[in-house]
Image 1 (cartoon, rainbow, N blue to C red):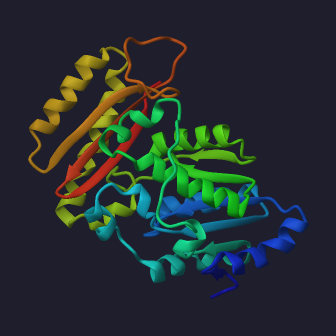
Image 2 (cartoon, rainbow, N blue to C red):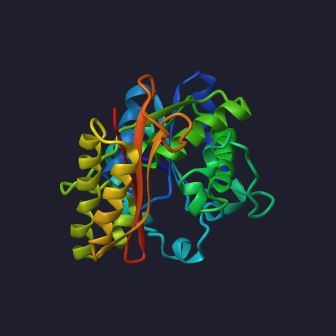
Amino acid sequence: MSGMQVYYNFEALNKALEPKKAQNATLGFVPTMGALHRGHLSLVDFALSENELAILTIFVNPTQFNSSFDFDTYPRTIDSDLEKLTSFADNLLVYVPEIKDIYPNGLISSHFEFGGIENEMEGKFRPGHFDGVGTVLKSFFNLIQPTKAYFGEKDFQQLQIVKKLIEIEKLPVHIVGCPILREPNGLAMSSRNKRLTKSQFDEASFIFKVLKKVQIDFGTKNAQEIAQWVENEFKNNKFLKLEYFEISDEETLKPIAKKENNKKYRAFIAVFAGEVRLIDNIALN
């Protein structure tokens, strides 16, 4: 495996990191749950372009799933994941931790107060999810001590949560948000896309079409009219089921009351294609 090093426990990883840290090498961190796609690889590109060394983790974190079905069916493709990473060669380390590295005291997540943003959107529909995210990332940040960490904007709410986590825990890590990568049909790249049938994958292009129209309409229509239109569009779609659609302030993630000039807004959506849950978002101004 052309020079790429894979570590299966923290002791081995730490041994490899110590000499680098002694030289004050900058370290970029890309946390993933595996089932890697081009979106993940673009995060590695960002990390390597800005740091002397990058580390990618593959860990399906049990405490952020509030459905055991979702956890059990989450794609696990470690061999093909490692295959995809071989081109990054010597300056990428891959860490596939044991559960006890991350949860030395058993599978318990800490509770975090993220200033209210944890109660919006995903927080409403996935209770406990962001406690699990905060717990696993705090553990990784403390173990790895990266200079910068890279997250895709597809999980925009998670990106804001992570920034808040850094602030609350006073961790010396710079968080970098990276653009959403899309399939040729517009569907946001996601590990969950692997669970879609061919026809579901094709139909799911509708999500981005709707978001593009929302982006255009945001210039002339109010948020309530737009939300009503989106709901109707999904009512008339027999392949996809809308879970939520919201236009929110990028900072607070609170739903828009009325448009203000100095604020940035974003449209957020969660949709089911069969049993597969897909999320997406788009900047509006």
